Image 1 (tube, rainbow, N blue to C red):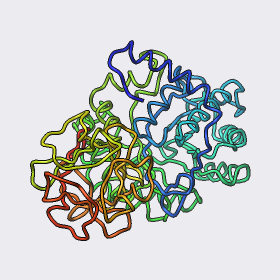
Image 2: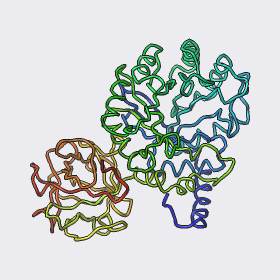
Image 3: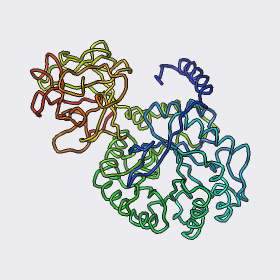
Image 4: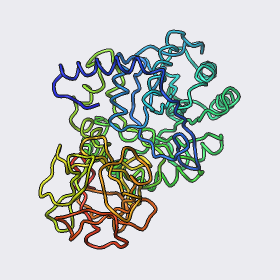
Length: 470
């Protein structure tokens, strides 16, 4: 959804969204979450997943608008706590499910399915007064049975089960609950998260020994948490069991428990997610508290995000990257004529937000751009895709109606790694030998008919949206 300026404009647009989505939710195609090796897959296609915390979903008054926004911002999923004590709780203390709250949870999951969002349903028995592990087992079994039809879910048996307070759940209890889930719904993807009280190798061994599907770990929150070295160390150990490494709680935003300033700006989180993907993680979650408690404060997640320009609003506006491509002459920029629907040239001398030179770009494998990713570019009209006519060997156009083979390019930079602002990159048409080339290094046509990488085939990528520079 395009975000309009001012609260009145946003309210009117939300009303249209609410009406339209509430009428169409039952028409949504099912989305299936699965596992392929050490990666998640969506409808059979491997994908790096980006989650956002929405712990208080059960008490959120505007789920339809919230989830529509979250999806349009570029997130793949949400993480919810259906037993959180800031809103209606799914379970009673004896492990039975509350009918009205189950209906509420199903409506949230229906809307997530409509928006093609994955949902991490994390159980937190410590939030229910009088509940113990045995009763939590009964509640999780009942929830498993009630939610069998949802293929876009994964379960976390207990959030941070290795912390020595009310969250603690023994290995034996986790194993018992896992066995019960398997007996009830063998296809359900199941994890049980561990905190950094124990290291990442412990989390991997725990996952392997119990037969859990995913290693869910809440990474250590040191001052260097966002660096590639930190992620390589953590993710490497998480993946040692061959299962997907899900960084379920990265550094929280603006948490006053941490005295160092590496969690107060989007820059750190942009580096963190990029380094997580580069290190081989399967998923990463943006850990913000804006969706925890809806009993007071703005009723829409959008307004809550906007109230924190850093890091929340800057970060969430980075996921759908927009870029400008500068030709190697350093003067001209690639332009989709008319904003899309026609030809592509490299003869403009200026570009900026809202101009025909601005292109949307996304990695088809999900997450931030890495060298070697297959990518697709949208023109400024938001409708058309850059397209190698005939699959390569001739012209480049901005006329593709959707993402197919002709609209897919491989982005590469010398030395590999994360694609950052100002990097020199080349673009090759899918699995072909053809590279995009600016004739004369800029100032004329752009084609997809070069078979070598030289100056004319090299472009500088400039991010218009917030970006990682580290």
